[in-house]
Amino acid sequence: MAGRVITITSGKGGVGKTTATANIGVALARRGKRVACLDADIGLRNLDVVLGLENRIVYDLVDVVEGRARLRQALIKDKRLPDLCLLPAAQTRDKTAVKEAQMLKLVEDLKKDFDFILVDSPAGIEVGFKNAIAPADEVIIVTTPEVSAVRDADRIIGLVEAAEKPAPRLIINRLRPAMVKRGDMLDTKDVLEVLAVELIGIVPEDEGIITSTNKGQPAAFDDRSPAGGAFTRIGQRLLGEDVPFMVFDDSSGLFDRVSKFLKR
Amino acid sequence: MTPISFKGTREGIHISLGDQPWREIMDELGQQLVRPGAQSFFRGARVQLDTGARLLGVTELEELIALMAQHQMTLTSVIGEAETQDAFIKLRSALPAPPEILPAPPAEAEPPATDATALLIHRTIRSGQLIRHAGTIVVIGDVNPGAEVIAEKDILVWGKLRGVVHAGASGDASAMVGALYLAPTQLRIGSSIARAPDEKRAPVWSAEIARIRDGQIVVEPWNAA
Ligand SMILES: Nc1ncnc2c1ncn2[C@@H]1O[C@H](COP(=O)(O)OP(=O)(O)OP(=O)(O)O)[C@@H](O)[C@H]1O
Ligand SMILES: [Mg+2]
Image (cartoon, rainbow over all chains, first blue to last red; front, side, top):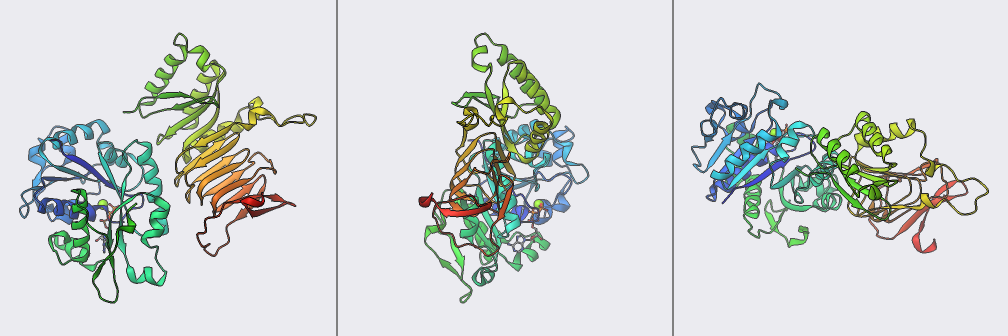
């Protein structure tokens, strides 16, 4: 059976695409799925750092595309999770180094050996974004609950629709419940009202993300981590499990179970 | 890859460019236009062009318009990205105005029929998208913040209107804007401009229409219209 290609993208930069890709990869691999994470952010690679695999890079995506390395040679196996692999981006090349057709071919090859291919897309609407979207069977949009990020997410959703991909799904990242409660941050309803797409996860703001990124140990390895838990649930939803959405409750510091009103 | 596609509508022909390389699109279009039997379909048609995610510059649009002109076709509206729209607007102001959008002679009692054709859009217009049309525009869906809709006649939105709209864009002060939920970032009718009040409006769903009365844009409940 051919793998599912899921591209993780956003309009605004720095909203958490790479963090999401690494953590969803870990979440799926922990459930026994064979996962390849593909860093399509050529020239600005950092998925390897977040996954803690930077020091093992020998070849990269451009080497494979240009025939200097075979796909197997370039894929880095995660020692913690044998089902998780990374295909790193080239650090020293620019976005135009890869053509859309080459990207399609590469992903087609990966599909034979993996259940999931997660593509970490660059932000914006340029060539890099187009290359990342072209092979996608599914698209996940990441946004933070800020007006400017939502506006850019909307633009990207428009482009994904124009590319005739299935309706994208949404991750709202870095939600700060205390701010929402004070009325200082958009809440989930506000965001969904504009974007009108299906929500696949809400990830709270979590300091643990910073430490886990620094250590190269994605939060989804840790079941007690609030953000890690949220990414684990996103993984479960991708596997078709019906996991209820949680909202952060300030007073108790725990997640409250809520009905599925958020689902559209 | 999505190829170029054609659809006959009541208003004319809807052409979706697809995502093939530009040269292939032009070749394909050129061949389609001269196919036996195609003449009657295309000749004299008004064309709505859907450029999707593709960005077209002035040169490409010019090439397209020139090819269409050989078959007496007129490009009346472009649905696509803001950059493409900008190019279209630039071209339109440079080209001699197509005869059907010239103001009707004062003696004529009824409005020119060609102006009245409506463009129906059945989806949400998202940020960065711009729709421009020489007649009325009807949107079934939302017009999101960051989106722009410009019509030379009325604009009706069967959904939430939160972007920028301009009705009567060539100076028609009798044009109006109606929406199920009217909260545009900016609303223009003819040469008048109004913007949303700064305080956030409670999301009440009640159809409203905006029009010019005594030189001012006023918003009224739909039922009073
Ligand atoms: N839920 C979270 N809580 C706290 N910090 C977060 C969270 N998600 C992401 N971050 C931090 O935000 C920053 C940007 O994240 P990330 O690199 O994943 O974004 P990106 O969308 O991939 O950025 P780019 O557009 O540059 O590729 C990082 O420093 C990351 O640690
Ligand atoms: Mg990134």
